[in-house]
Image (cartoon, rainbow, N blue to C red; front, top):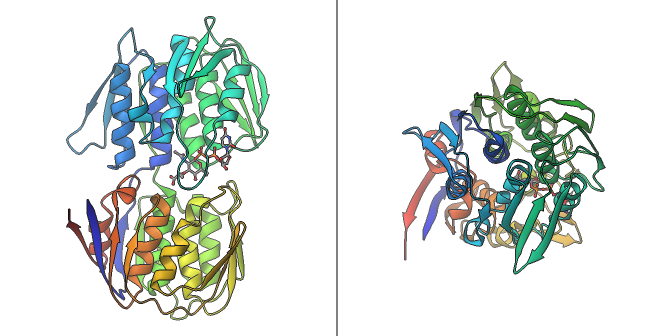
Amino acid sequence: MEKFSIEGPSKIRGEIKISGSKNSSLPILAATLLFNKPVIIKNLPKVKDINTMISLLRSLGSKVILSKDRRIAKIYNKKKIKTFASYSLVKTMRGSILVLGPLVAKYFQSKISLPGGCLIGARPINYHLDALKKLGMDYILKDGYILAKSKGKLKGATIKFPKISVGATENSIIAACLAKGITILKNCAVEPEIKDLTNFLNLGGANITWKGRTCKIVGVTTLNKTEYSVMSDRIEAGTFCVAATITGGNLDVLNFDAKIINTELNLLKKFGAKIKIYKKKLSIKGPKNIKSVTNIKTGEYPGVATDMQSQLMVLMCKANGKSYITENIFENRFMHVAELRRLGAKIIIKKNKAFVEGNTKFIGAELMSSDLRASVSLVLAAMVSKGKSIIHRIYHLDRGYENIENKLKKIGVRIKRLNYE
Ligand code: EPZ
């Protein structure tokens, strides 16, 4: 197993290039199952979850040719695709459920393992299944698998999601592309990654339009040869902006459109960061003293991203005053709190609120990663701790942050990846 050793405190300066978005790449890769003609996807991030999705596509029969740097995938679907997605693959990445919609829409059947829960919550998929059922998919749950089929093509329908769900919105949009007739999806998630997905599908000949949280899909018979470059990762960009703010550093964040993290950038300005926005980059200068932002609550886009909650909590620990953060999306997304306390943080959890004491002096310690975003908050905290911290189980980080230690080293962080038994 590998671990990180980080010597703090560090001050970061320099520039960082943001990689492609994991959470945009996953639905787009799943949606390539709809295509008969070759599809080229560019700007893929080199992270484990993308490898898992590519392995899943290959196990279904897609021919996937990767460029040497693994950022470009050329995907060819043979006539007959398998429609079985095994537990071994799905259990490593819940995003695998996104192949359900395209498989049933294109091949009228699929046997796919139910994705388990994860540390941040039970992660049910009822909204996915209910929506696909309204499009004409029949299914039973047996031995931990979803046995799904449809009598020929899916049929367009009007569907209102009971709760906003990123994955359910994505699965339904992908499935509706090849359905007969018109599908109207109401109360959709509108994250930038979903717009990236619909831009990709429309480039391929789909017919998708948006009006607020309502998405209209007019079914088509086939999709064309397509080449598409995935958007940059807004959570990676936001994470590095928090890093600059917390260390009082100076950072140019390149290769992404700052307006997609406007909400988070406005928060960082309240913490005292100075931010200049250019066309495809931003410059951020962290404050000497971090101002306190009394309360933050996560919400569906354009609210504060839940995937930024743990990073912002670390910033609150260093701010000059008390504050609290409310997690409104997942029921158990405070796994990082116990670890931050090992560094000296004073945080009290009451239901979905974490009350944070400011002006914390972090002292380096051994820490355990638990999930992707909690792990990166430990890296941020270690960067501003006095002395050495060791972060175990960093495979969580490798799922969603490309080459993070080299990116951090380049901007002045004393971090090493160590192997140990
Ligand atoms: C996506 O997860 C992201 N994953 C998550 O990022 C992100 O945190 C989340 O959206 C919220 O923005 C990918 O895009 C691969 P949801 P998803 O469906 O689609 C409940 C990361 O770190 N719900 O919007 O699973 C659910 O339990 C990951 O990159 C149901 O009850 O999120 C949650 O409480 C973590 N039934 C809420 O809705 C359903 O059928 C929002 O979940 C579906 C969801």
